[in-house]
Length: 362
Image (cartoon, rainbow, N blue to C red; front, side):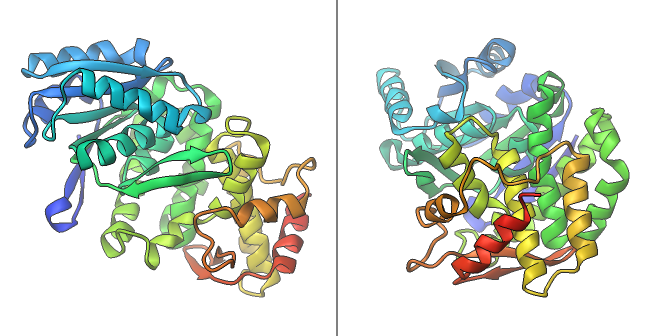
């Protein structure tokens, strides 16, 4: 088992990474300053696989568990789903010391975290991520949210978990598409700030895709460490943390236009990363070789890099204006300028975005 610490003063917490940790969840959570009642939130896919084990562990530790299950899919990360969870929490008598425990991928974590942040103005929150994307990205850093039909993650908060428990054995039940989806966020860390990690991924991607334990542990620990450094520097995204949005400006627009669930989050981010690389090339800040390495690694991971032909550039750009990263009516992009270095580029010209989208269609 390995551990990564997020150092945020009174909001600091640990990320526990290892095999079989779901069976230790009760002991780990009971050791936190929380009450005896727990709301265990999961979905219809993960619940049958792991909710029983987690509930048993929680109950062995003396915690009283109320289960809540939502349908699987990005479209259920909504205010209506949050309302159902509020009802379950209220009916179960959860108070301000009761914990909300999220068992699932990024959708479950974001939704349960949003409920934890807003129920009784904030109750303790624990993440048990079961997908690669959640283990390397969405469970870490305290971003919680629900979607709106006009934009992804528009309604949300910064609310740090009390603990993250990443059981790597859960990745064995992921379908291939979901595994590859998580790799978009992994590759992102190499592009924005860790060229050694990017080089390692180029050499070891096949081992990661084969779920080799040592390779997976390296991916998760290194990704969490990279994110921890950024979050500790800028918890609420006033500056450097925006670098973590590489690929997300275009990616969120594609998710919104295509309909939540048509593309996985990672697939959309991979396409958005290819667009950002093309923008860097057109600005004269990124070399052709670096563009080819970025798109090549995304393809090696089995991720798409071409903007869908059926989505017009004008529609994609229009959707960008509804993204939460837009400030003062101007679109902000994260642009790679080398392998291991990126910049935050405000007031990106619409014409430049259009050209980058066109370049990423082929």
